Image (tube, rainbow, N blue to C red; front, side):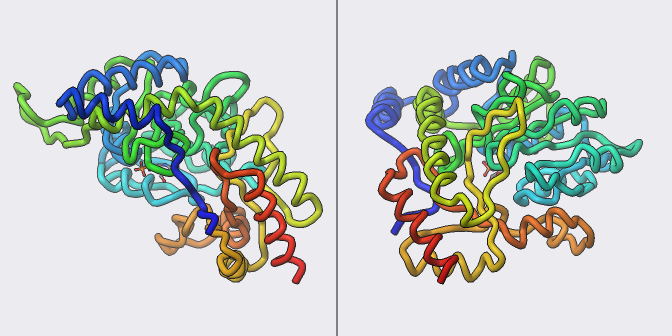
Length: 346
Ligand SMILES: Cc1ncc(COP(=O)(O)O)c(C=O)c1O
């Protein structure tokens, strides 16, 4: 079976984790601090705070920005429920907007229409590894949380995503671009925002009381994250090689992931094809020993029983994500292309 996602670990990760285990210091400590510094420096942002997940990173970012029950937070409908959850944790109101047909990213035009006096922030996920239009988003003049859970390493006009927003968040979930098992990071040039997030991630031995969380990352997870970050350029290279192979093999066979607009560097967290009957296609590929998935399980407006969102509906009704990860072999990629051709043309 060719799985949809696969974790890529080698001796470097195993040694890094073993070193932490030998040290006997497993909880948030020096390795977490080191990962924070390394990711901040890689992305080109001054400060970072590590937490237990991307969702925790979103939650603490919203609190740090002072977003509470009177605020609205704008997000795309075409994204996972983690964003909706974080907004509900702070009792703010989610305002869903549609995406762009040519990038599957949040539409700045729709964000502009959704801005109100109550807007506290917009969360901008760079979907599937393709940077959103940060020029258009930033021109709206509202606080931006960049969601880089799927896009670490991607660039917009030569700068890393995660360096544009007021804050940005990252995920170390096992099948993301960087694997820590679980984990997340918050980045910002504003030291006060990161100090607040760091204060809130840990509840013990505080002089004053406010509800805080246990959102700490362990040194074990950070050791994994550090090794993965070192290997990120080679991971991205490998993903791009697979994309070259898929693009050549699927040309004229099936509509594919949109090409990156000028000035944007895609890292291909996902490779998306458009199929009229995604469920039937996924089943047939499974019979051939290849796991494919819908890249977004269900758009948020469907959970909230909202209508409209035409572009999201159109993309969701057709989008299928096929396997792509650094350890996918050329032989496997060819097998996948052949299987798609057979399933489509049968
Ligand atoms: C765009 C996006 N944001 C946030 C998250 C949440 O990250 P985590 O699973 O680490 O909580 C995910 C995870 O799937 C995601 O895809």
